[in-house]
Amino acid sequence: ADPARTDYDPPVDCAAAQAAAEALGGAFARAGWRVMVFSSDVAFIEAPLVRGYVAADSSGRGVIEVRYPMNIKTAPAFPEYQAHPDLFTIKPDLNPEWEASYFRALRDADAVVLIGGGRAATITGYLALGFRIPLLSLATFGGAAHRLCAAINPGQDLPAEQDCNLMSMHEWSDSTAGQCVEALRSQISRRKTEIAAGVTRERARCHEDGVRSGWAGLLFLAAIAWLVAGFSLAPGHGAFWLLLFGGGPLAGASGSTVRLLWE
Image 1 (cartoon, rainbow, N blue to C red):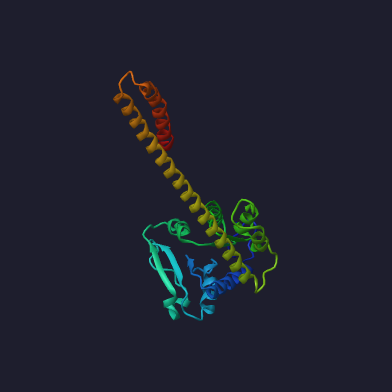
Image 2: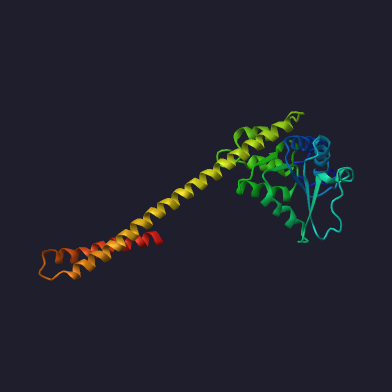
């Protein structure tokens, strides 16, 4: 939320976005959540978010994870670090490009919140939607978050209709940050349910494959036993022709079952 930028589409209400970020920081701290931040520059929303987080973290058990590329000589300098160094975890990225530390952080994120922003925020939002990472894209303050919110499909994407209603609110109040936390809790819960259902389906598929394997093995052994029994009988024996000609179809059934399982 940089007031010096003129390329936000739509324009960002920078003062309101900064205030909302500070309120969200406090809400995350009270919820006991960790946060990942990338820059202490006043043009970004991390600075007020960290300020609100530290002010609300009365337990001293919170974690503010600071990520930055190695080509930056010193870690982002948040003023709160001097008085509360135990709240911060500094994680430099060996890759010198900021995109590496920024986008790679999505791998470790349980949720994503977008406020304002430009191109990088847009990419982050679509990655979160594609990988079904719980997401709040606050359209209230303009910028990329506004456009991305309009692209969310509640019937297909993880955010539900009530989440989209929250993201599209025209007015921001002191209670909205707490509502954002609850909305993210709900998305995290739904995502866990989806993952658990996927694991159950995979286990069922593995069980079905195991049953097919058992039948394939039994059919294969039966075909061998059938043919061995057929050739062990004298040609004049009544069961000789039955065993001999019945072995072919049984072997075919065994082979088709094995092939189906293999494919």
